Every structure is written in C-alpha cells, then in structure tokens.
Amino acid sequence: MDLKKVERVYSNYASVYDHIFGKVFHEGRESAVRNLNLHPGERILEVGVGTGLSLPLYPSHCRVTGIDLSAGMLEKARERAAAHRLAHVDLRQMDAGKMEFQDDSFDTVVAAYVVTAVPDYRIVMTEMIRVCRSGGRIILLNHFSNGNKLIAAVEKAISPLCKHIGFRTDLSLHHVLEGTSLQVAKKEMVNPLRFWHLVECVNQKNGQKNGQDITPKNGSPLSAH
Ligand SMILES: C[S@@+](CC[C@H](N)C(=O)[O-])C[C@H]1O[C@@H](n2cnc3c(N)ncnc32)[C@H](O)[C@@H]1O
Image (tube, rainbow, N blue to C red):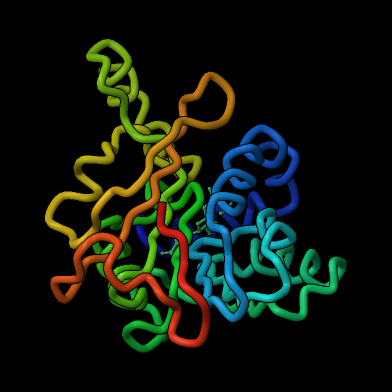
C-alpha cells in the first residue's frame, strides 16, 4: 500500500471506524495509557491517532500530540477532542514516515494498531525512535504474527487481502524491532483472545542503557517498568 491508498482507505473508514474497531480494541488502548504512569509535563506523541479513541484516556497534566495521515480520521479526532475539551491535545495531519518534529521532541511515543497499517514500518520505526528522546519510551500496541506455525501460515495467506482494508497480518514483532535501538521492557497480551501485543520499549539510541535516564526533561522520573 502506498501513502495515497492508506489515506483513502482510512478516510473512507472514518465515519464507521469507531463502530467496527472502537469497543473491541479498547481494552488494549486503556491498558497502554494506564501502564504509562504519566507525569506532569510529559510529552506524548501518538502516531496514527485515528479518530482519537485513546485521547480522553490521557491525563490533562501531560501534553499530547496526535498525528495521522488521514484527514477524515483526524476530523473525527478533532471532534472528539472538542467534545471532551481536551486542551492539552494538539492534532496534526502528518506522515509518520516523515515527521516534522525535531529529534528528541517527545518523552513517550505511542503507536496503537499502526505499525501494520503503514506502507513501510521500518521508516516509521526509525522516525519514532528519532523523535523520542534517548531513554524515553516507545509503546507498540498491535497484532503481531503468531509463533504458532499453523496460525502464522493463515496470517501470511490472508495478509494480501487485509492490505486492501488497511492493514497486514504477517508482521512479526521480531522484524519490527530488528536492528533498532529499542529494548523491550514489558510485554503483555491484550484484547479478546489475547491476540494483540502491548509492548513497552525503552529507546536506547545514543547508547542509552535500559533504565538509566528516564527522567522527562521538565518533570519527575518516569517509571519505565
Ligand atoms: C488501524 S488505525 C488505528 C487508529 C488508532 N490508533 C486506534 O487506536 O484506533 C491506523 C491509523 O494509522 C494511520 N496511518 C497509516 N499510515 C500512516 C502514516 N504513514 N502516517 C500517519 N498515520 C498513518 C491511518 O490513517 C489510521 O488512522
């Protein structure tokens, strides 16, 4: 899928997205944000924020930036932010593979059901690592391809079809993390049938070691684990 197709597919989804993917995947969003233990002033980036289903979950004492490629999805997110009066939330249309933010702009980067929906997950991972400060956290909430050979074969077979509806099913966590500076700090299974991963990674770029400097630039220490 290229960027234009992704934009089109998700803008077409926008009006029905919450009905299809809202409730059923919400446990994962709630766990992701709850586990963050956010501190005052913490800078959060949510990549592929979609219709903003997770936005009301963030406490108002942190600063949340949400980006998405799809104008239609973002419009819904803006409506939600206005309805919930989320003054601490800033929403922008942007390609996660080419972000307009400077290096180290965020303490925590969240990608909920996104890495399998982007045209090139490697570029997006590189960008997330770049804009997240060293020692910060990157949270991946996603279905990743299963270790079970039979299920993995099914996932591989249906992936080309699923791409037409906006995501792939054959991507493994191993491939997403391979060659990156990310260290897995915590991993749990969430959502119905425990089929989705919630993975908390520490960004060890610049040789940052796990758990060393996890203090937000303007706040108190983060709990990374
Ligand atoms: C499956 S939806 C997930 C939405 C939301 N995070 C949620 O929890 O429901 C994937 C989202 O990623 C967005 N997306 C896909 N490729 C993108 C890219 N390159 N840059 C920014 N957003 C992208 C889509 O427009 C869509 O809103």
